[in-house]
Image 1: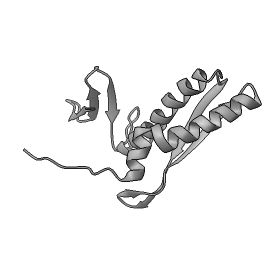
Image 2: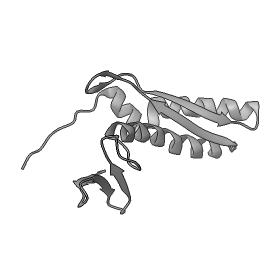
Image 3: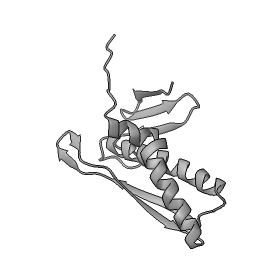
Length: 130
């Protein structure tokens, strides 16, 4: 089971912490050095895809020269995002590496990225109050 703890900090900000001690500062968008919740969602989509594409492409014998991406979405209502778009920025060493990377990226998006698949399938979010 995956879980994070999100809490208000002593300075009035917010942070998410995982069981391994990693921490991310969260804010409303006005503060410097913090992610908004929507940005964290987009980062989760991008992170899930990129950390899966890299090793699968390498396992097939192709090391990408550059691998980055931009993940974006616009609000279609005040509290609802429209489609999320993942745009890769890659540099490949050969045509064959490009073919492999593209095939891997499609498979990761369609099958292996838990975050993207969960959003696409509409995973239920439950609220539990003590």
